Image 1 (cartoon, rainbow, N blue to C red):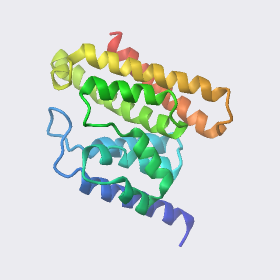
Image 2: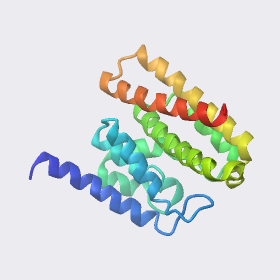
Image 3: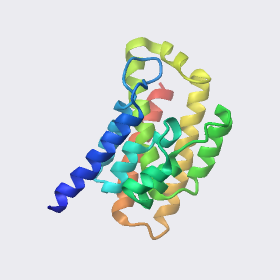
Image 4: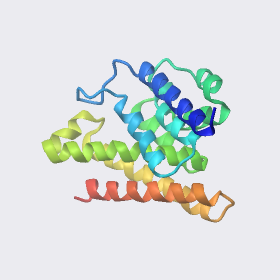
Length: 200
């Protein structure tokens, strides 16, 4: 079996597991199956040239947070590295919205570059979806989200600030140059999306 076939099979396995885990879930306020989001995150990471582990983690990034799939299951099927990235991208849903978002924003300041890359791709696809729907239905789109426009702007700008802090700190460290370039590429796209949506 060639290395390429092995690579494809692992990603296909992640797609199947994510599809089963998210079965019956939909994007907020729409009839769009939720699985379109993690698939899109995986594609963003693939387009940026990210590693197999990052693509798989992107596809699985919401499973532990939003489904019955466990980290142990991910670790068993895809290894500890993927499981650690998914864990780093998962929120504690037992906390209230503002509290858990604040916890994640703070955690990003010291997160690994891999967690930051997947988070960037996650938030980028979320905002691209909001932008598309905003163009169709206007301010009504904010009724789907906790706290409306004001809370969402606070959240995404805060995430961007935390990721910027990490991006700048990694420049001074010994992070793999290719991984840093991937992070920078997706970060800049997220930066543009945040400015476009919230600066009008």
